[in-house]
Image (cartoon, rainbow, N blue to C red; front, side):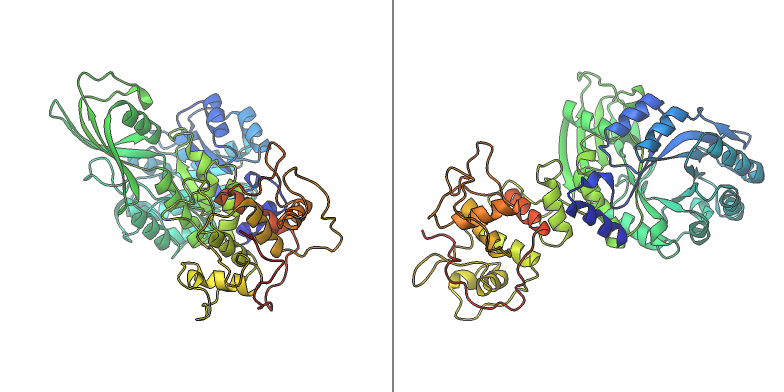
Length: 547
């Protein structure tokens, strides 16, 4: 919980939230050069806290070997940016090489430790896979040796197989979750490859598989050490025109984007598995397009399972649900750049696919995290839709901790029969909202709110000092004795609501959900009234619009 409190302290101090992520954000660097890695990191828009580079591996004789010489300039530059740089060591699924390394684990651990210190790395990630339960003790002892040899300021992490089925034999049996969780600073849970090369068609990692893997890991591993993996690749099952069948081969998500744009494709979202799907037909007459690794698609039909913004948002919200350390992705550069537009929102548990990159992203994400703003339907917040009077009432009531109250039989029918009835009735009784002038005022809860009405709503919530000069002219279209003058001046003085680019206020213009959220988010830095004891019906001067 402290991580999330810290990020909102940053937001309330008007500091860019991108300088601190609410959760650990790890990614792997694989198969490239320092310039490629640097460019890929730049695309992430400050959304990384740790990168694990492919500097080390286990060779065929079981020795620690350099895959490439660690680039000190690259490492130091990332560290100055506040990004931790560790190296991962892999046996590339070679069981025999892994077993040879475990047989000489003391020397392998010593060599890796020396390299971490010699090249100025921040730690090491152990990614030795495809051993079995027969190797569990040796593998655990190897990690124990590293934990003793590495300086305390260096990070030790280990990548482990997802195991929602509690398997104890085969590859899954290699990993002693509890002991590895005790020895390491971070446990990277590889929550992908639910379906794999050679399997029946299915998701790389369905939502249920991912969540079950996380909950099983949390039975053994402290939540503050657990990182959940997400794939930047998909898999395909194909029937080629030449009769060849392909089962579960991998595509990068970037490649899948390219494929679906260039070939006849049907796209949809699989609600059951929470993943993206594509049915693609490649004709023999279609032009060939280059894919990752220089591959090209042969003519045939392709059934592709992968991730998109909606599925990433769903997976990453599990961080918030279980309060684990964070997310790790395999591998940087395999994803479309647009993924990073919404990444911070998803990592913080904000599920709105249509908010990423919006000018009101910070305000709406902030109000969502504070349980003030709700979404519209599934994974959307519709920031550019006109906001209604009822929606503004709900936002202000939640901001001010005004509890909803069931309307009495005396309440107007337009309030009693409205979806926001409890909040509307509380707002009316506490003077936050009033109806039109007249003996039987209309409250018009479903009407779009005007900018003047929005100003009046918000001014009603503020402690207003008596020293405000309401004759000051900030806008050419707002002046006494207009009914909204005092509210507009008040919000301008408080720095909560401003005019439009042309210098006008346009009081009768409509406001969007984004504009209302931005104004109300700014009110977090203002002194607001205590409504806990105010139960009187609204009276003038709280009449909002005399129409």
